Amino acid sequence: MSEQEQFNQELCGFLSQAVTPFHAVAEMAEQLRSAGYSQLVEDESWTLEAGGRYFVTRNGSSIIAFGLGRESGPAEGLRMVGAHTDSPCLMVKPAPEIVRQGYLQLGVEVYGGALLNPWFDRDLSIAGRVSYQCSQGQLRTALIDFREPVAVIPSLAIHLDREANSSRSVNPQKDIPPLLCQLPENEKADFRALLRERLLEEHADCGVDKVLDYELCCYDTQAPAVVGLRREFIASARLDNLLSCYSALRGLQDWDGAASVLLVCNDHEEVGSRSAAGANGPFLASVLKRIAVERETYAALTERSMMISADNAHGIHPNFADRHDENHGPRLNGGPVLKVNANQRYASNSETTGLLRMLAEKAGVPLQSFVARTDMGCGSTIGPITAGEVGVKTLDIGVPTFAMHSIRELAGSADATNLARLLTHFYNLRGSLGAS
Ligand SMILES: [Zn+2]
Image 1 (cartoon, helix red, strand yellow):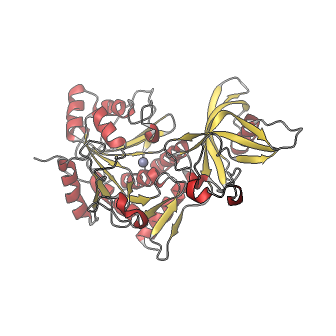
Image 2: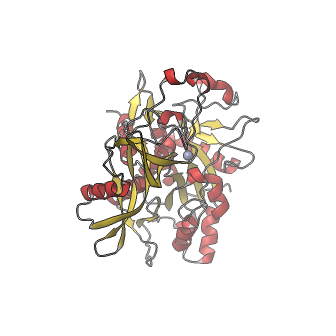
């Protein structure tokens, strides 16, 4: 098996475990532990040592991992990478039971800018975090994942809507509540009772008395796969942005320990990042201040550091090529894409992209560039938000994909390995991160 095939197989393994931001963080924490990173807790005092490898989580859905260099400390500049753990999905409402025509359905909210059409006719499962009261009266939380396909949103047959192919639109309140099961008339629908059973199945000794609340997402059970006649593509849910989280994680695992490095993966990017755990919240700044210890060191750290914000880009789609600027149409497998926007929807500037171009050449990684059509709006990511919060110079990069925010997105099978290689080179880069 080639290095790329091996990498993609492991990426697919990660994607199928990381079905919610909570599960993504749990999986990353596990892999960091095996790579010698030890867990810190935010409400305890920290003793950090040169050469040390650490990670800390917030809300169970955001994570920061860092390593303090043996040769240059954090005041000499941190090599930082940022990504996000969340993806658009359907989330179960607090009182979700809907019983109609003998079916039990779940009320769901749309999280983020989901492309809704692809959610129909999929074998869906449910996963996330549950809070419960245990028999001794304490509040606890645990992760659950049904794994099996337990829900489905069937399409309306074309015979009952002849205009379906030309004008069907999706009403998220009315059209998407998934079917869980058929319910005999004498049976009462109780979603929390169902969750209690599941908790006991996955955590036999959790001591659950009653389920209080939850953050649960529906997700597609179809496994991630390498597809295409020549195996050119990776098809999976949540490539935006777990592909970047995983590539950066691999970079940290291959860190040589010389310079100081950091990875931040935030929740809530898809809904604007404004939360305790989001990029527009205090998590990263709080950790950086504790790494720096003193105010003067913190000022030097932020001035000398650099952040690569890694989030997927839009590849030019052969059926819709006019949606791209003619000189900026990144192709799948053409390499990671530098994203630029004059209006600061992306944080890249010519100093940061210049450094990255030199680095990519050394690493033997091809680069492409993206700027949105001048007559179209531009997406954004955690790059400008982090730059605005912390004041670290930043650039935006990401692998080109199709079908962003669909339940099944598509990336090039060579691009993730190339991104990981580039980020590893960045983590292992010596010297100054700015122009002299
Ligand atoms: Zn994204």
